[in-house]
Length: 299
Image (cartoon, rainbow, N blue to C red; front, side, top):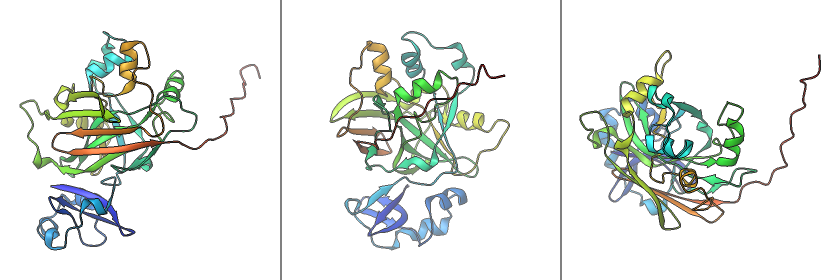
């Protein structure tokens, strides 16, 4: 089942996507409600009674409003390319690594994405996200972790972050596909093809099964010593083989392909889930950040 949140004629609805469009759940029901309740049979049975609205007539919003968004770095090839070609830190193999990103900055499958203030090295990241249900993974969606690489690099030299390098926008969509639509292999991995293009030219492709840990193990790690909740979103991290521009820049020693600019169209397709397509636009031109006041000699 494909669950969507969408805007139609000025109103926001949650519904089920099928071949003839999207049919709404009863008023007031959100996708997060369904995730938390495990999709009650009564709603599942009654949802298709209303008329379908063609997808061309709606604006797809992020499928749900999650309590938290974690983003892992689960693809070995991506780490190898980002750190130094041919090298992966031994610490990567010891346990999954993730950071929390901004759940208030989610954008829809076809929304415009502004370049963050002050950034000249804007990038995409091709990922898949799992959404937690009450007792297990509820479903999957495409996850594009937009990244301001210049801001990210500065922040992480302070050994904290990323912060403004990552929190401006994350695309989720086009919808949330329930887990029963997929089959995992003997180790729990999903073997799905992933592709990304810019302005119609393919940049990278990979398979989701090349993750170092299956999603269930990422969930277990996220829950160690704390708790996770239904609706939490866990990103796989960027895939390898051109899952982002920065990986290719490191491997090639040049900004080839170039950083994203206004007017660029980034399209991502994941087998069994769908396609998201966002246009990069100019961001706000804000004043420079004021530097710190040094206090190191004041005693």
